[in-house]
Image (cartoon, rainbow, N blue to C red; front, side, top):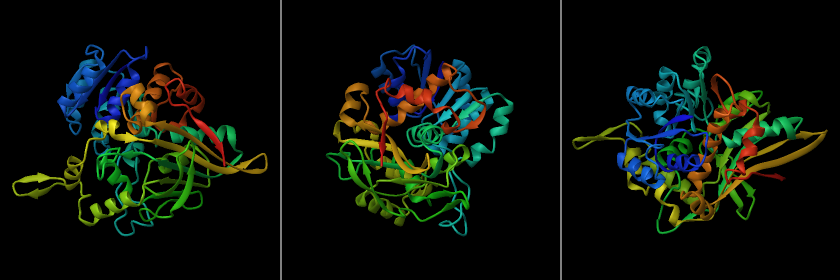
Length: 401
């Protein structure tokens, strides 16, 4: 398989490193706006012929198409912030390539009632083109990171093998990670974090459909496994709520994230000051988006691994009925930062995100997952994916609640 990897930040590097030993990978083109970053990752991989490096502007569809044709790639992997989804998505379609991303096209809140009604939902711009992808015989596999991605695979597994009836699918994410030496240092893209945490969270209910609520609403304490313990989680906008109900029959679907009081406080301050704005404003003689300034002021998550300590847990809590009896389970994956640094040279959050896309590559390359159109991870058989997880160094667990 030949892959064009657009975006060589923390997760992009993790994808390249985890893919490198796999014999199904013929070539992975490393492309990023920051060519110095491309050169850095390429040097670490030590295989420039198999991992050629290119400069690209991810907002320029024509440039992405040019690279896809130059290297005759089979698939374009989008490892950029989701603001660039549509030009990369459209470039794959135009060049006859399959497509994969880890976060779907952006939402727009409802103009008049943002905390009750949905506006443009995550992924709407992509799903409305599904028929065209089907007619062209192409697959756009959207939302295949850890959350969304692995969590969606777990939801499908729960439906197929663990429950007769599902009351709620609830994605729950928590950690005991700390980043030492910084007052505030997010371990994932702050651009994306601002987007998903400050937008109105979406909830699915079978009798209502999709609706929204206020950011950080409905706090609950969730007990995470493997020593992480109790973490307060709150509602956050996330793709699983838009994906899972399309293929998994559940009465309710939610996503809650363990952010912590300090992190929520910082995000609220960013919102209050207008620093979450992604539209450029004029500062003296320069036009710049406030959110880009925030991102530039913070340390790069790709280089935080040596300062991070602890574990992060991503998983899917499912409540329902099996054999006439109530049942609750939590399907999860815990990544230890020290182990990820030792095995992959990448910090836990980006490694835990990236390995899922790599399993997706393998399943597509081997024909174990097949499809056309725009599809989420829960549209496929979960068994081949879950059987690969331990081999990739990320075994899953199932906890009866």
